Image (cartoon, rainbow, N blue to C red; front, side):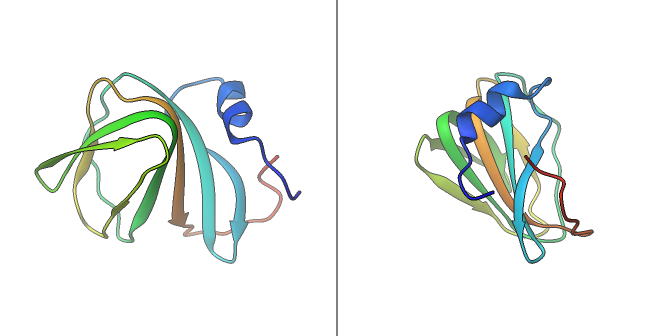
Length: 108
């Protein structure tokens, strides 16, 4: 697989906020998901993750600071930083993150 239509992959997902692994490079995964306006509970991870908005807007609170990430922009959440998605986030989001259990063949 060389070329991926990210928007189509997100549109085909059965549920919003359920990520799908598009591919991986070494132990780094590239996931896509569809945002639908709902808020999500705060979370943190032991490694950093990059959040790339393909279309729409991602609104979050990261380490107590409100952030708005628009289409074509990327936000990096550093390791161990608590972050939560705020209401009104919508569109297509790509998440680039370290995979704790890298696997092959889990993507389209």
